[in-house]
Length: 204
Image (cartoon, rainbow, N blue to C red; front, side):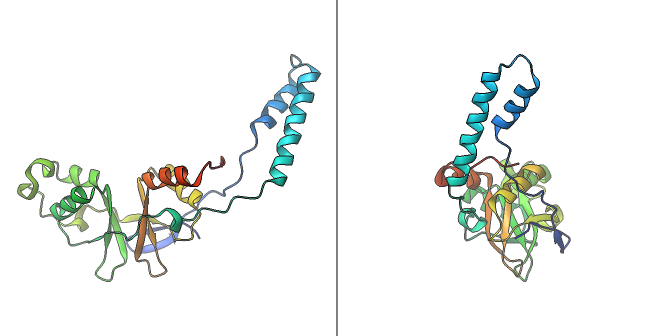
């Protein structure tokens, strides 16, 4: 399933680069050895044998099943309505140790995202003043990011990791077919997945 980006409620498919295996390092070394007269023929023969072994290993090794968003996402996901205040969001995020919070409409659909950085940028005295902050009662709709990237429960985790890295976002909400949040994936979830699911092959 594709990554989706929505801006002010208008959703479209996010152009993710195709996921393809990275060429083995030995290929590059072998190519250089063939062009560099300083490498003796014995080295090239050794590299060719290593490459043949790698190819045989790839053919006999069963493919790893894809890890999907539903395998790693944190669920159930906690959301706030867009008319909630900054201090309500700050209280919830500090109490639950959240760094990102999906914002929903009155119908429960995703309309935005707010991070702890968003809150401290728009209300820097929230940390100290709390409810007495000068901006404490501003609405989340005023500061939330209207451009939201999201994925489906069946999206390949490699696509999600690539988008999070390319877009420099710390979390990605996971939506059902009705665009209602059913989970969220953070960088910590990706690291936990790496630890629990074992080595992940390199992909470009």
